[in-house]
Length: 434
Image 1 (cartoon, rainbow, N blue to C red):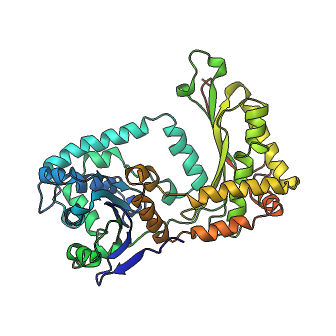
Image 2 (image 1 turned 45 degrees about the vertical axis):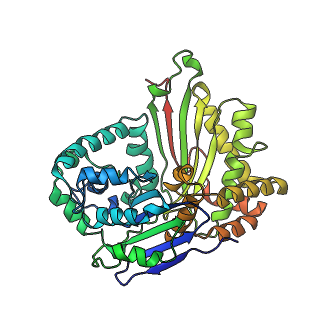
């Protein structure tokens, strides 16, 4: 049984979570519950831009050049902005703990926001926004699919921001946004690794005496079930097989809103997704890939995090046969509703789901495991718990209890009734469409 990590809350509300490990290094992440959804009108992009400035714009103690030299000595350093928070992860050799705590506390409490760096970062961030918006499928995904499925600012907000705001951003805007949320009572530092016994005292020297501020977390609103069908076919020249256009694949995304992870049907929805899109003996892989040869990567997924239950089908589909593939998807929906599954099929699906659940890591930590395979998973475990997610052990217990009857029931309750009258969102990016 894994040892429970320890926590401590300082008088100013700053929280520390730590887990000693048999490691020669330390991995940490400072989580600030202040992200893009905290922006007001005219601030679109300020949260993400501030993240850049915290990392490169210097502090009251260090010039930008000194900051970069110190951060450059760490084994890993980065920052991420989401709708609800800003995270500053870092990996260090254990002897650098003091320098790490000093630098990170300076970054979040005493940013210099150097004007020369601000002008430079305007160009960098505008380039980042342009790269994102110029990516194939951006318009389809961000102007149609995500808004249609979520119908919610909380779940469709573009974190990178608006170019006009970024072009005219000022130090005053950045400091106003910073003052509203970069407060110790709105932060958690999570560390794992070769930690000293007096870790609470060491952290308290840098974070424990900072003044309390007005910052508060945002809990994303709950996404409601769909009330209508939304379908979009668009031209996707980026998907064209130029050597053999008739063999091109379209990009298919089809989704419905279902209950989130706290609902009693969550585990059954997870297993339904496994059977529909991950089994080689039934469902979409068997029919669309193996039998019909219409797709290489057809699959399905269920996610119930952030007050949002998403059940989706996706993959590349042979363009000339895409309508037949879509018909098969709805036929497989009907099979799940009308036919009781074989017990062995459900057992296999539960094993796959249990494996994935037991090893799940939330972004950005999933992509950071290779930087520190021992300590990153420990910090991810803390982050998951502070998100107040359903505990992994409970999810595993719920998965084990799912029956064939449960799968049939949730399929009947939540999957679209049929292609013509069902409520779903579908996007087809067709390379042969003019």
